[in-house]
Image (cartoon, rainbow, N blue to C red):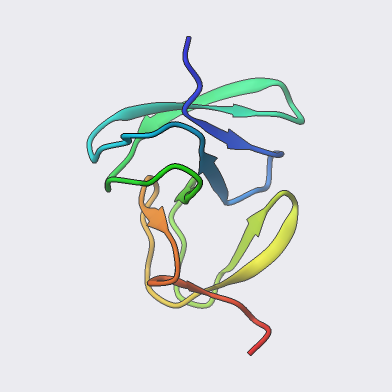
Length: 94
């Protein structure tokens, strides 16, 4: 089995893509490191290596958790499997 994204722990709302060439409609497998288990679902967008994907649906105002840490707030609705980046998540710092 090939791993295409990483998740630090249960409770994270995003995973990080670790392969190149992820295309919309692909079924991806991710490794949840803390629990040593895998998860699989379909991605809805092309996602570049190093970028984040949503592990669950997120609404405007929701907090995004990565590596067990708050990394920002949702500013546009995000579906499970969608690309998370500056177009739909903003820092809470400013």
